[in-house]
Structures are given as structure tokens and as C-alpha cells.
Image (cartoon, rainbow, N blue to C red; front, side):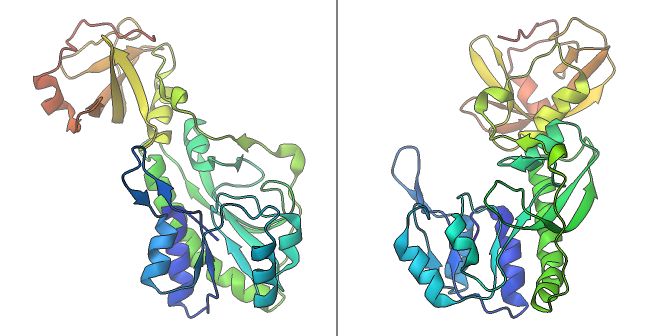
Length: 303
């Protein structure tokens, strides 16, 4: 059970290592904004390529058809990776070994919808994947194993997601074998230490130049590629895709060089490397500045 690109390497790993996958569940195809195109989930795409039976219910809640289907299948194990739906309590007993979830954080930290983004935005020094049993409450089931990676200010959410997905694709194989051999222990989480990674909103992308440079870099990296960190200048929106910290002095929000280096708190700057003007293509900063109206001495407000 999975939906985004993050889940694809894990499904491929199970398939390539000979595990018979009876069925894949994913979110239904979504209409694009203008309604011209139907977008299948990445998991649907790979399932069709591998010719695996696929189901896309709108919801599992009060869904007798899917309940009966899974009960009659009598599967050994269900593996859930960013499926995007709550699995009702009554479903959790329909496989012999339960429902296992691969969650992209070091639980109990960052339960919820956006653990990778929140971890980067919070300037955490490490993140990882937790392999856990699903219970009724969100990401609160007992854990078998946690695998960690280091974070630094150069990694964005897409790069961290790829690293964690490949790590999970490798490590899940050992966990499955131990589950089938009844050798895997699941330990209760310390619920008093739980934090929640709520869904990202577009408005969180707006940069406040009164913030510390590290916090702004965390915002740029954590919100890459979507929805992205941005600022407004003369009524237009500019999305920053890549930046680094520099040492420069100016008023917060002031452009202090000809290469769009912007002053922020504590005598630090944000040196923009890649930028996208609203409705335009992504540009390296040198190319962007050739035709830009944002010149040295401009001040970018937080409005």
C-alpha cells in the first residue's frame, strides 16, 4: 500500500527479490488542475509496468467490498509506505502478520504527513526510517528497527527522500524475513516524546528576512521542490530553489551584491544560486540577473 515516488523503490525491491505481491493499493488517479489530464500515482505506474494486480479505492473507511476482498485473499503481510489513507482498525487483522509501516522519521519524532520536510526545516542533525506495526493511532505503533542518516544544510527534501527510500528498499528485506521467522521484536514507542509533522501549507514558503540564515536555508531545502520557499518583489513571486549562507552586512532583506545576495539576521546573507520567477523557467543566478529588476540596493520586504 503506497502512493508517491518514495514508495516505488520499496515495491521494486520486494518484486525483484522474489516476494509474491498479491495486490497493490494506491490512491486513485487525480485530475490535473485544469482537468485536461488524469495523473496516476507513481506506485500505480510501476504496478502496471510490473503487471501487478492494482486497486485504487477512494477510501477504506466503511468499505465492505475491500474488507471482503482482503479477507478472502488471506495474505501473509501488508506493507504500507506513504499510502495517504487511514487504514481502519478492522482491516488490521486481515493479514496473518499484520500491517507494517515504513515511516520516514526517527519515531516518535515527526509522526504525520510531512516528516522529511519538517525535519529539514527544524534543522535536525539526523533523520531516518522507522519500521513499525500499524495500530489505530497515527504512526504510534510499536517499532522493530530504526535506520538513521545524517542531515546537513546542503541536502534538500527531494534528495533526503531518495536516500531514505533506497535505505528502506534495502532494509525492509531483512525485516520481512525476521517477521516470517517470528524473530522480530516490536517495542512500544515513548509517546511522551512524540512530535507531529503536520501537512505543509503554501503560505509556509514565504521567507521572513528577519530570520536567521540557517532557518531560511532549512526552509528553502525543506520545501524543495514543492511548494517551495519564496519572496515577493514589486508584486511578483520568486521561488528560491537553491541557496547557501554567506557573510555580509546589510539591512534585513537588502540585496547587497549584483548576484542577489540578501542580508538577514546576525550579519549573515543568503546567496541565491537557483531561482524561478513566477510563470518562468528555473534559472541559475547569473542568467537570472541579466534581465532582473532586483538590483543591488533593493530591499525585499516580508509582505
